[in-house]
Length: 239
View 1 (cartoon, helix red, strand yellow):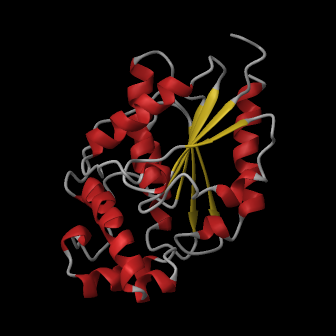
View 2 (tube, rainbow, N blue to C red; view 1 turned 135 degrees about the vertical axis):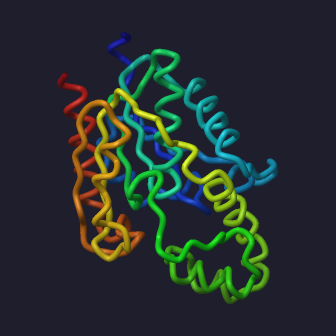
């Protein structure tokens, strides 16, 4: 390994997210760690590209990005919500080529196969119902829901991401990775008590922590989230 290459941190955004989704976190990560926020097509810097609507396409897109950006140093993956679900399959894909992350860090997600009581298919809802779902989920500025132009830009992105997650629900069944997992959820999330479900998807260690807040608790705890990620990175560096 080239010792001049920096330890890498790859970040996978949540549904509706972009390359800018983790800007709030960057200042809490040691600058000696390469902070790499990835982005799917159809948003942010990749707005002109076609939206992806299947997990396989999303996984392959992220896989191709990481392959191009790898520097031979160890690395960690972090994903929130949708990014957590995709992160599991992506880790398996990276294991297959002999380049797995040192750790998979997941948040805002109890792990694959767990559904909320109201089993609705969000990407097929009409606009009125869809806006209600987005408002309840949180993380979407009120001005986006109230402004027709902003909503018309944002809604197709959210629908595509939800379709990716919901059309082939629990396609991760049977996946087990040889990478430790660190999981986090907010104590106001409906399924936070199911967080240990992540242990069903790793052959090694699961650590988890519950923080105060709703689905987007990460924005309330940037310093603590940064410390958790840094500790995971540091532990991997010192191995």
